[in-house]
Structure formats: C-alpha cells, structure tokens
Length: 173
Image (cartoon, rainbow, N blue to C red; front, side):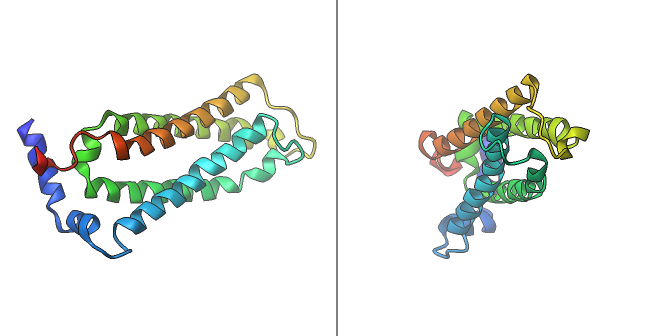
C-alpha cells in the first residue's frame, strides 16, 4: 500500500499536477473542468437525444439524419477523456482511492458499448436511410434505455467524486 501512495505522491508532486491544482490561471484547473463539462454535454447529450428519438420523442425527425452527430459525440468523448486524464493527474489519490471513480468508468464503458451497438443496429442498417422511418425494435429500445441509464450513472458518479472522497492527496495520509 505504501508503494501505491508513493506513486500517487510522485504524480501529485509533478510540475503539471502542481500547476493544475495550484495555479491561479484560468488555463489550469478551471479550463480542464470547463472542457470536461463541455465534452460531457456533447457525449451524453447527443447520446441522450438519439436514445430519446429511438424511444419515440420527436417522431418526425428521421433517425438516419442524426447519424452525423455521432462524429460530434466522439469529439466530445475524446475532449472528455483528455480533460479527465488532466483532472486525474491533478488529484490522483482523490480519484483512485474512491470507488465512485471506478463506478463512473464502468458506466462510461457500458455507455460506449451501447452507443456502438446502436450505431450498428440503427445507423448502419440498410433501412436507416429510408425515407419512411420504421419503428425501432424492442432490442434497440432496450439499448436506448441502457444508454440513457449508463450516461446518467456516469454523470452522477462523476459528480459524487467531488463529495465522497476520503483522501485528497497522498501527502495527507
């Protein structure tokens, strides 16, 4: 256990981690938090819109027309991943000793599996580009519900990270 805290302590004492955590610059921690929120809004928001459309909201909007938004969703996801790594470097002990962090990562992994499955079943299927939309099957609707559930779970677990940690820094042991 001491070796793990030594590694976490060395990450926390790196120049980048210290700058992110302690700099008064808006380009440090505030920028990373902002990028993380924007990326989350794009990734979870676009997935949410697609899932809600599959579940019957806005039936006049053809599903095939929503496929281009997946590129924006992936851009948001990668923005979120990069800013999330920066936030992890700023406070590795806070995150890596908190079960909520692993719950968040699990929800994100499951959400990505569902978005890939929805992409295959909805957007890459031959009928996806038909002018007359066909109602999605039960399996696709279950995937849409799973997608909404996973993204909501990831967001909630992520927000709980700010309030449920037991150790902020390795040096505070």
